[in-house]
Image 1 (cartoon, rainbow, N blue to C red):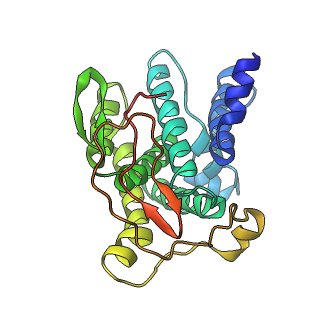
Image 2 (image 1 turned 120 degrees about the vertical axis):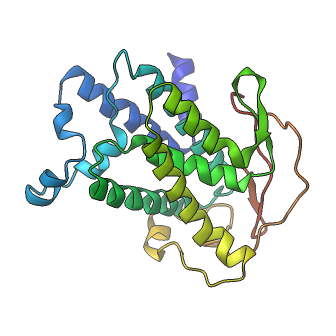
Length: 257
């Protein structure tokens, strides 16, 4: 138990709370402590009965059962791996910027879920984070199961197909990828690569509650420094942040601990 506790404490703070919530809320529903009907996103109850907790619980809840347990565990693994890599990579020392990314993606997914009458939002949010990681490490060669190898930029689409095969929905993964692309384009691609205006910026109020560490500068103000794509770097971080620049290209192999 002490080993599990030490491992849990080693998870970056924001990922740790998200990871814990994604275990606790499905467990509450599974044990019947709260009916799952109160945990999913029902637009009618949200708008007309003012059950304002539903957008949050629907992001953390997943119905775990014999037909969905493996899909749940796989996506929980993706949450842990890719959120940790982002939080300790590009967003290292910038918790407010990472919280803003999660809030932006979550808000876009909730709006989409309300419009499309989607009850479960866990997978779209996880996929949006995975997509951002994949774009920041797009030239990294990753290994998937059965020895397949490809660039990280294709990973979200490979996982889309994989989740569909094991029982997921293409719609969930596709929405996550599109939301992740929207954030990446507005925050990184458009202002840094295309020379456009910065259309997204972290609200200053978030810096009050999540101050920068290690003397970092608020926000992202410099283009990423480009490096040649490394080949098969195992266990590396999801991109470093230092000196006001973001190192794109560092990554890790899928399945590495």
